[in-house]
Length: 319
Image (cartoon, rainbow, N blue to C red):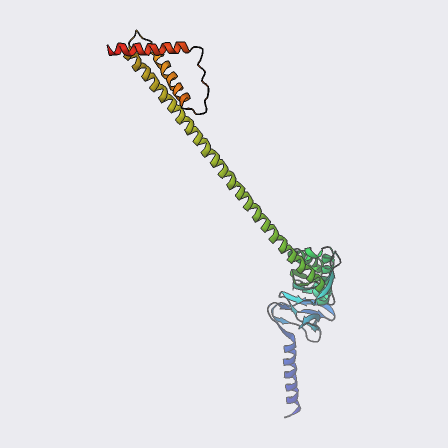
């Protein structure tokens, strides 16, 4: 082989190397920032791109790989998640606790992400930590434990506004763990136990109260029912007595009518009835063992006259 052959082979190899360096293939959802002679030239799009070797070069940026910072000339445009280490925060009521946060963000402007900040992951991490301390510092312990959604919303709004100049969009922030001190956990457990005992005592007293109310209502209903029964009994008894008196009066009226028909119009039936009442009374006085003295009324002679009238009445009937 002569010198010309070596020269041709060298030229072909250089052309291949030059072509390989000039052709840049960018995968989907990735990009590169190209600088020409130290100045920004272009942002490469997914697909085949042509650059000038040794004149154009890709700008390197700091990325987070496997929990460590590293340099790379490829910018990932997909949504990324940063899992920050636990950090100490202090609440409004001076309770120190540890909080672990997750941050989901996406680079929407590669130019700003490269030229507006030197270390984007570190800047986002520090901004998240300081913002989280400020938000937790405005809340008390109970609010911090029960207001995760509120904290996430406030934190996302602040970070999204602050990272806009870096070409970053913060999609959401999630608090993984909120760990109070062990002394606070013990106090919270005792408080919860006391609250459960309180609720149990309240429920028991409410049950006793309802039982007493139902019992008193039952006694009230029973008393009312008994009173109604006595009332109905007295009413029926009174109605019975009234009916008996009516029947007795009707019987007496019938007796008078019969006596009147028997003695005729010439005799007075009242004398007969008066004499009958008087004889009944005298019989009761005679049978009464406690009665020692009997006083006859002033009008006794009239009664005796009535008896004489009865005698005459029977004589007329016999005739």
